[in-house]
Length: 114
Length: 110
Image 1 (tube, each protein chain N blue to C red):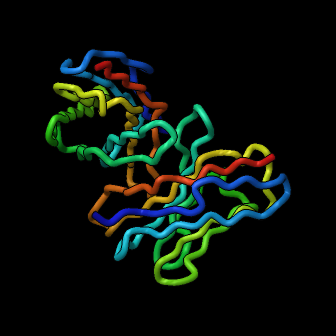
Image 2 (cartoon, each protein chain N blue to C red):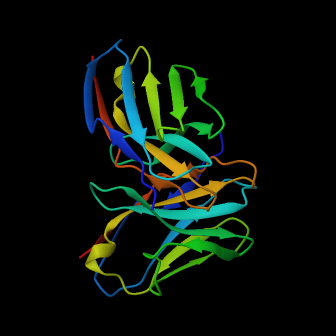
């Protein structure tokens, strides 16, 4: 069964460093998402991406964040200058078409900022 | 803003028993989805119910939706130890984002 994959599974970085989290959505899905979950808290929406542009973003998704689909398979989330409060589990998700509402999530990347 | 809030926060049952989890939300929705998360792992989509549906079944799962009360319930019948996980409801109201609740942590004791 097709699934969303994410790499790395765990990333440790120092405050102020740039990180890139990578995702391979399910092939032929058209909508892509990033969510994050700070330990013990709710899963929070960050951004949605469709047709090579951001379709919606949350207040969390400030200028320090960016997303990119550099080729036909990868979907990346970049944090330019990480802060301690960026430590969280980051989930990528994808959805097939406008008529299909189910979002399929990857296993997540645990980001630890020290 | 809408919020999905599950209750109870934690539920411990014996294998074979049924588990019922509830979710409440605040604004109108297009659909409500339930996800499972095993400890430290990703979110697994379980079932989606649309705003014009009242009940839906999938295997041992039964979901109900009451839009007048802005609430949903997830019933897992004949629970198994492997059902031990956190369960989240997530709502969508026409925007792209899913809004998640805090989840119910279910423990099924063998």
